[in-house]
Every structure is written in structure tokens, then in C-alpha cells.
Amino acid sequence: QAQLVESGGGSVQAGGSLELSCSASEYEFKIGCMGWFRQTPGTTRDGVAAFEGGSTYYADSVKGRFTISLDNAKTTLTLQLSTLKPEDTAMYYCAAVDRCTSGRSFLKFPDIYPTTIWGQGTQVTVSS
Image 1: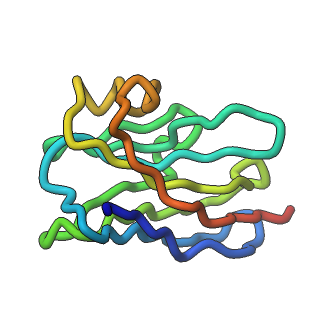
Image 2 (image 1 turned 30 degrees about the vertical axis):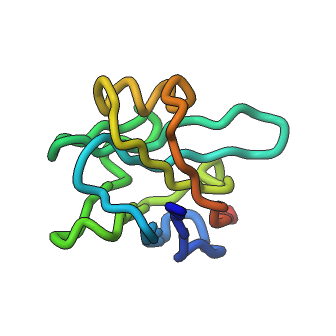
Image 3 (image 1 turned 90 degrees about the vertical axis):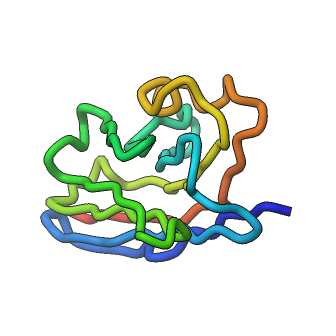
């Protein structure tokens, strides 16, 4: 059964950096769409960054600060977070689907793809 496992979350002061990793088990990030999403209690889950066919997509709130990348082996999806702000505090989730219309649509509407798989999440806390 395919699984995604996130790691790298933690606590950091505003202006700091973190690197999140998403490792796949019984799944390869070779095709389709993959990305990072975040959610705080009582709010909806929002797209942060997506990767599809070598193209990257970002939420406006993180453009220029976050970078999504996929390793050459296509087994680890990474999100580099820099110039962090308190409003970046959230649980961050990795997700992937083997077929998608576009990375842009996956970033905005991951749940329209019924075969999307999700990790358990990793907490990022940014203090002011």
C-alpha cells in the first residue's frame, strides 16, 4: 500500500528556515502531480506548492520564500521554507496523485482526484 511520510518539521523563529521531506513507500513520484499543503485548526487545507512534469506552482503567500523540488531518484519530495513568518505556522502535508490535469489544479483542488494519497503531516511552528 502506497504511503507518504513527512519529516523535518519543528519550531523556528520568524525569519528562519526549515526543510521538509516527503518520502514515498510503495510509490514513485515519476508521473502525475505531487505537492505540499498546510492546515491550521479550524481552517481549510490550503495548497502551498506543487510539482508536475518538472514545473512548479506556488501559492501567492509563499512565492519567493518556499521551494519545492524532487530528487533525481524521484523518491523524495522536498519543501524548503525560508524567511518564515508566524502565519506559516501549520501542519504541513505531502500529497501525490498518479494522474492529474495540471499541477496548478492539484495545488488548488487536490480532492477532485479520488486517488490522491496523503501523508500524516509534520508540524511547523514559527514564533515572532
